[in-house]
Length: 416
Image (cartoon, rainbow, N blue to C red; front, top):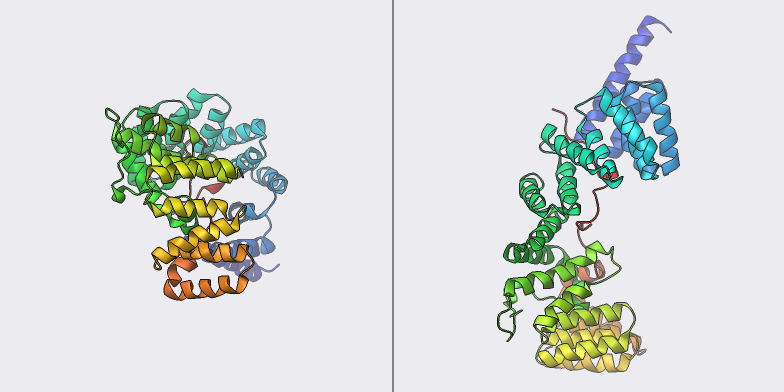
């Protein structure tokens, strides 16, 4: 190849690398990845292009293939700290902890300031019960990079897992300045406050999470009534001597346990039972247990509990509507009767209107059901659109305090 051709090749590679970096900064990750790949077609052993292409394409490959590719990277570039870090994350995802630990340590040996490798090794060591070293690395990672979001989140989670709740509170407060109202962090924050007995602050945090995330699902709110702080519900009821902040914090915590169970449970039954031991007529706790039984397809038990909720507050339409939803599969006619009464008494009740449409469909009156839904969608299109696009328990974020942040979800910070 002539000198002129080599110069043109180098210029082309340089331009494409610059374009790829630009597209990455703009968030055009697919285009960025295409440009790195195009460089590799011109120069297969281009070090930075190989590293960046692996970074942007690893999520698209199966785990074993990523291991193969990361092995190739460290063979080609044994002095590249990022290559060893990628090898570590690839092996860690397959639970091959020995290889992962070795790779992260090699990465840090090559670059002692690699805060991502430091974070990943620290997370891995905590899981391997090497807690002291792991925690030290996690603390050092955010010292090196104070705005490292996942680093703050992981550190707060680890403090919580180790039972260091005061430290988890302090880290959550500091991390909030970096991450803001991140749902995962706020759950850790609230849980830590709850553990140390600060129920007043825990209540505020839990209720805010419920308001901003769980209630974004219209379906969830229809099937499982949730009381907002603005409703000024008396969690204490007629019981004297009970701490209303404890009751309210425990109530909201019960709903947030949905995230900790990965969607397997709608609420924490133990938390709800705590409330009922103090206040047996807490209608929303009774309603919550009814939802648990419905989720487990134990309809007679669900009916028993929702009847108790209705007895505690006969005028609460949300409880009557919930009973209608509980019955919709097993006794659709009884469900239709309940929804019909709700709609007759308040035609503006969109939720009951939707329930009536579903019940009509369940008893074979499909045309009436379609006509009613059409009418409802014209009256409140935003609600119907939100309903169709949501489902019970679908929320933003929400991994709970008991799970260390995934290594695979780290975002690359802007270069400075």
